[in-house]
Image 1 (cartoon, rainbow, N blue to C red):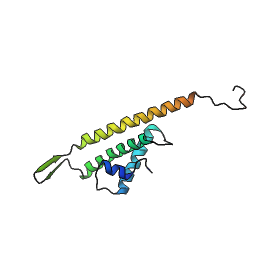
Image 2: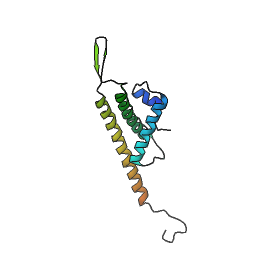
Image 3: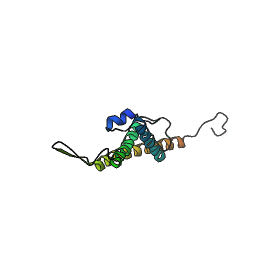
Length: 126
């Protein structure tokens, strides 16, 4: 199960895709983040938002390629331009920033734990 919920992704970006399709995108986003940062044992809101933004990138890319989110649309006398690439870049930037934060926290935690020498009762040096 992904760190973010399908409802979260739907609240961020409207789509006609099914819940199963969106769940697949959320799982793909989480896998992508874990590849970059390592496995996460206790995810928090930072992980949730990174997953959500990364899934938004995947969703917008799919909408762009399958025609669900056309570059231009016209309804009556209103002509709308969807700047999809800018939206993708914006969500990618947000996700990358959070992924960097996660990576730095993992490094800091590893450095702290790496410097602490475990003490055992039977340890002659302890």
